[in-house]
Image (cartoon, rainbow, N blue to C red; front, side, top):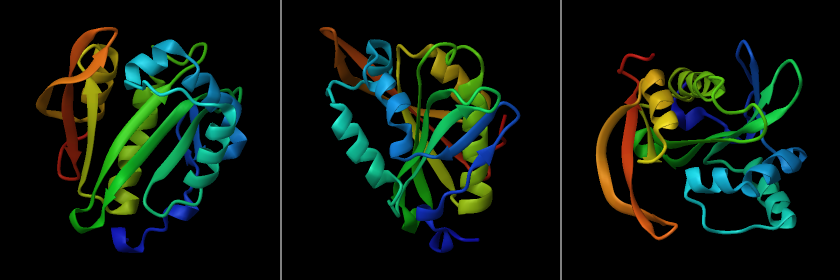
Length: 186
């Protein structure tokens, strides 16, 4: 398959040993809301905006029908617990490239390797099924846990954007990382 043939409006569910990555939609509003209402999740993602549940529901209604992005809910297979989301966005069809982001929240979501497990599945899908050549991300310099996960997946640091985020009166750099279809994966 080539990227021109991929239908982003018909995302498959991806399975890993511990996780189910299911197309995100308005049925995930409660779990998603917990993330955008959590101060630590907001800090790690650099999100200053505040949202209402109605705005979140409307957003989730749109992502399921989007033809230029892939949004998955990260769900534990054994309990059905919503852990967060993993997303491919910013589609550049001409250059077979997309952005990557992940946000995990909730009790027990962090420090268990769920982000790395979900990331490996999405990166494999990006290269082997969608037909991408490059997947890129930005991560804030204070998020060492995420940087370790990204390196484990196979992302490579490309550069630094100085003072990219102002958080609690402090300037924070953002690191740019990417993985190519030709790179070794962790």
